[in-house]
Image (cartoon, rainbow, N blue to C red; front, side):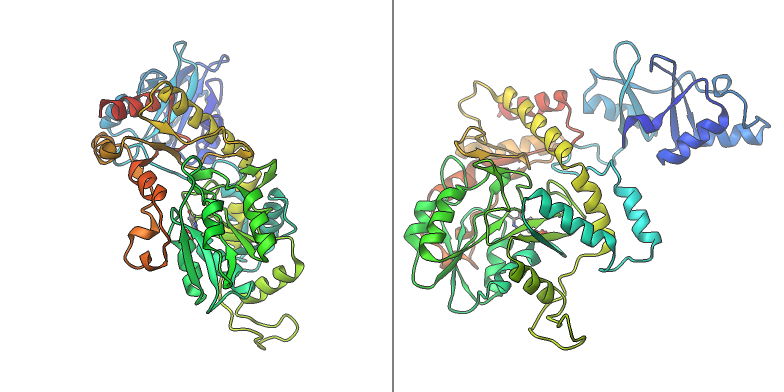
Length: 471
Ligand SMILES: *Cc1c(COP(=O)(O)O)cnc(C)c1O
């Protein structure tokens, strides 16, 4: 929510103040003078009591506003602010040295710093309510089409097929490509399990290969070594926002007649060689889960330049039902549809993706600066030739034996951080598919994802960094 929605002039009437409170849903208005300095606050409860006591709707709020109130300053960190919530207040204005309003803090049960959080401050609510009131709350409706068009355009792909989540996107893509029993599909050892699960669902055999030490992405040399006559596809995963070496991967695919299914679930907007991820794969798959770069709650999309694959995926997404003949099924399909409600949120998110990527990357720069000069803490590379990474979760490597102590230290201080994915090759249910993967094992044991939300302040960054350094 933008701060502006909480601010009302101290010259306003009671009625105007009520309109402000009514539209911000926060139950409070911050009253400011002409230079945006905070001079008072008024809550919806205050107004209710005033009206009961005979105050008029057109009376000036200045006369009745609370001139004494709890506030925080830009120099307070999240611990200082947490203390101020002890009095039971739910929302606290944040001001600079001159009492100018710069932000606000909202009470959160555990007062901790979250790893990830959706950022829904644009038209998300408006479009969602619009979709809801239209009664088109299921999988038909204008927002589904709009979301598909706008997102595929953003990826510079011709077609987009929106689905229920990122995992179904991967499964739908592989199925549409005809991948199944007897085929092999190459995947990286470091990824979220959905990548390999989607391969297994099709009946094909996954082949797990090692990653590159600098990018943490699938190593094209290992892909080459793993090729057999049965290899049908490669799934490069742009891990933690870092694009894979799509030049090498597309060459290998071309020379060996393979499909490329990009797993872009963590890298919306990243670029290889000046081109957006999602524009390289035969089909490319995205996730819009709540912690991803942009979100629809749950959701996913397959993008492609192939009209034929687009048509095929649409049919498979909808129970394999013929487009021409209702209830005639051409294939054993799925119900992988997304809803109009989810898509409404998606349309608003894609409107703001550049802003979202910008605050994410600025936050990463703050961390990067804070770690500067420390050789025992390595932040994810942003200087690899050809690659323009985006920030999903800020990711660092610490000394091998110290990772778990760092995580413990952060947890004790209310900071939500996370270890890297466990390599697929280290899990009983997948290890029979794995080639020799040394680098992934090492990187995984050192890796930590740090809080990457809009709320993480400069002061929070320096606190987090000090806590890590203390270990
Ligand atoms: C999140 C994620 C997925 C799965 O997406 P869901 O929407 O959660 O099903 C797939 N691959 C990777 C690399 C992911 O991070």
